[in-house]
Image (cartoon, rainbow, N blue to C red; front, side):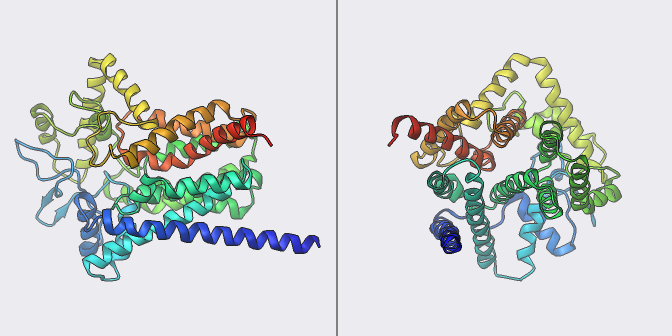
Length: 423
């Protein structure tokens, strides 16, 4: 009898997971055809085309520089057959796009394949997110949270955009899943997948290395995990990112994944910056960039100029930029009241964002402070907002932490249910 009941529950769980995946995938298809991108643009177009033609990942920051204009995303610095090796953009999403290029689809089919693949990843992330929720909540609230994650307008809309946001969101959910699995049982399987996911996130977003180290420190100092396991995670993560590290050492003599912190700092902290940043470059900065040697180290040296200018701006007017920093934090958690993005103020976007922002903060306040899982998520959420807000905030930046906000919101909903709807 016990085995029959167990098998019934197991089958029921399997059907639920299949339903969550199929439901999530099907509701994303209309968005692709209505709102989806129809071509590669800007940096992704150049990077993918250059990978296709030359099998090289070359730079999109330097551009052809003249005395009047410097855009952040123009064609590359080109001296005949010489291109500047890219260290401005992390490589993973470019290679993700390039993977589908090798099948020689027509442009229209190629874009649809990319967007449908992102919808598949997004749908898988809903399934994994449901499993994570079960660490904290009842089955009903876990299903409720998974459906919110699946139906959240930003999550659906992003599937139709040529952007790394969906891939990052998927990898983040998988990272949290294997983080908790490894904490519970640090066997080789869990360690390998946690390392693979961590390395992939570093290759996708360079700043993740900070959050990765924060996670390792949390497991080591607060959870007292086996030091050998932590060292193994670090070493395997290095193995994952090592091919690109070696590439950069060989090409530009630098141990790095990406060198864009200076540009991002300046974009978010210059006299014209808003929450979303501003890339309008004044004549003085153009002249400084013009003086940077036009060689393979251009990305690195130009980024140093941007970094110096960004720090100078903050130093010269700390009150202004601290106020802007606080505004970025509020915009990250809630909404940006001065956004310039198209359709940002459509009720289907800003109302869910505002609602989940409010309920997630209330959930953090009400959360179980003795739960190592919840404390880690709160720590990660806080660190993410604090660090990213130093630079600038775009609407899609909230998608990778949406899963955390929904978990915190579920804490709030569960508290409401327990206190006001007791049976």
